[in-house]
Length: 191
Image (tube, rainbow, N blue to C red):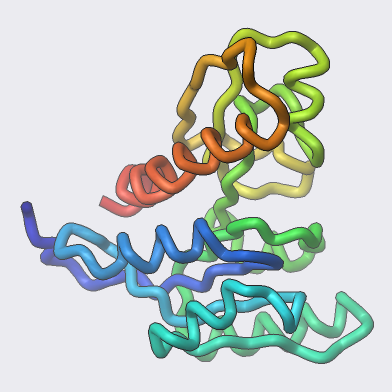
């Protein structure tokens, strides 16, 4: 396995829930070939399970108590700039970032989405894919821009939908692929 010889990029991961993609990214960051160091994990949900995992791995966690999301973003920008964050990875982050925030980190925010974009933007992707009797689905890592799930695609993985699949089984199979392609997308843009 080749060792990454450059300076590692400091990464912030934004989560809202269980943090399975966070775990995958942390494991990836520990590999010799990885160009990243996960420096901070932010969640808009103080009860996000992923925060416990980040804490166990001794990664700084941030949950800001702020009802006004604009004010929260202002505080977050200061923290991210102070820590010299070079890449923000959204991993199940269930808030839409403002255009102002996106502009401040233009080209440095990526997201993973559980569909083959540009199809099935937004929520409930697996249910919609099954209802529409699609043959394939998958997942996409893309740059974040001002339009929901519309930024430039970095990496996609396509999987077959089986007749026996339901929303839950399909979500589980897509999630396994998400864990594989998020690191590949990071390698693609940083190596």
